[in-house]
Amino acid sequence: MAAPSLDNPMLQQAATVALRILLFRAGPQDFPHAPQLVALLPALAAAAYFAVFAILLPPGVSAVIALASVGALALVTHSLLSARSLSARFQQTFHALLATGLVLTLASIPAMSALAPALKQIAADPELLKQPGAVQTSTAASLVLNALNVWNLAVYAHIYRHATGTRLWTGALIALFVAFSVLLLSILAVQLLLPLVRP
Image (cartoon, rainbow, N blue to C red):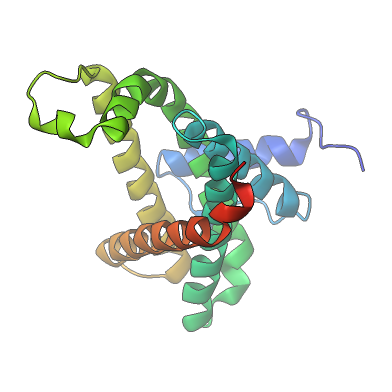
């Protein structure tokens, strides 16, 4: 089957809604309910995550973490919505999370690339953290990366708030829980699958 064209009206609508969600002007209920996005968005999100992780990690490990992150996000989101008898909202909610996360992940690549040398130094020798000035980092890149992380968390809170019909703070707590759960599940996946991806 041919890949969807960039001038596809459905893709244009999805991109427009994703940008509006990023600006808190729309919610997951506005995201197009399109079967064409079921495979496309997870694949694009996994590719974006891989691009970021591969800046610091080996390709095999990066691929496992990227795929695990997408799978864990789907699992946790579906479980949360099902627990509130809102499983019918899963597809639009999941797609909204993937689309907005995709944009912010791609936006983080320049900052991650700028910080990569310092992060690799620290990973190779954690004792450097105890030596002031031993590792030079880009303050601007750090600020950009932190701002994008906060923005991503705020967008996720906004999406979960609308998906669950709860208040803003409840959406924020759900977003924090999801972020923590996805991180734990991704680490578990790496521990289980790492022997398979090591050369």
